[in-house]
Image 1 (cartoon, one colour):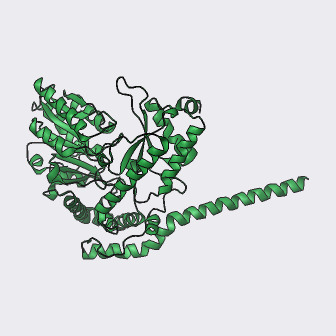
Image 2 (cartoon, rainbow, N blue to C red; image 1 turned 30 degrees about the horizontal axis):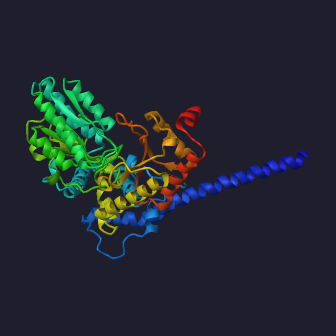
Image 3 (spheres, one colour; image 1 turned 180 degrees about the horizontal axis):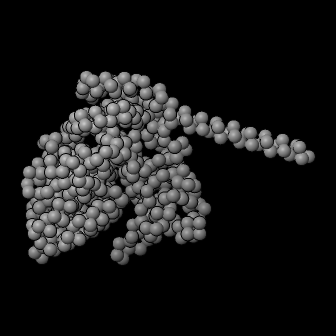
Length: 487
């Protein structure tokens, strides 16, 4: 009996090791084989482009990228997980990852030559692509930075100096919406408030029915402060809000700022490039910052800060918060070199343009594709759960808010934070959950919303998986108060 038991145990161990080995082979094939297959072609193509400097033209062929090719580009994503949270950290296709690796290898082959002689021109090439895409007047208006926090620090630290140098007076104000991103709010606190400024916070009354609700609240706040004699030095406005997510009427809001004498306008557009059309001449802001890794297929982390020429040639002191050898030579120059680091994410813009031009309609086609799909899936979920969308479809980009069943008992930000990993761990669903406090006097309103995103790799089955997961929680009698707190 002992011998048979030992043999059975060995067999079980052997089968378990085989199963683990098989799983590793499957993951390796999904994640790395596409890169290995693409690498020789991409390497030759990469160095050919560097050598010849041939601009990448939009694709005019009728043979656009296929669904299977899209899935191959994102085969490195974790299997079995419905990833509907692209808005948080973005995505990067295999062909762009390959280009990233090639830039890294090129730097490692001869670091001194690459960093001292070649890097600046390569970053200028990427800045030029951004300048053309956003319709900026001059490439010197575009600085590449790592993320929005850095861009916000650049804009806000010059306000702190303005207070210190007596250009601003104590009590001068910055105006923002209550939904302003937390990290940007912290920058306002760190630079503006601590220097003696005050903050005007405009209510963001979600859920919304129209842009006019946003415009009306903003105009009322500015007129009230102007009537009180307060000087509003800066407005901070989102282009696409994070959570709850809506596309803001930025053109109208900027015009109101000009009409009411607001001196500077900074647009936090973290979610904009790649999900909505962006045109600096039409928007008219002084500062505009967007990531390129959330919706524009770049690897983390690369973003840009646009500073309108009239702002860069005024007496404003715009500097990168990391002071290095190029201090005082202009913001674009300071930003391109902030010490020794991996700048390769800044250099893949030509490869990203090549990727997006494989789609019918290029980037505009991708934007429309994602918007149409996320609206369709949002409506499907709202109908399945008997709830509502957080805003009309024309106020969303590639993300939309969908009400969750009230019986889930989402009654605080803490409930929302805990439900998110619960859905991921138990059901393999990645989404963002939002708690919306009831408006004054409201009873029985929806307090829990899910933010769903759609990027080109998403499939209908991802949203069915979310639908079924929430329905399962409802059937099981799940509530945040009981289940998550006990866990």
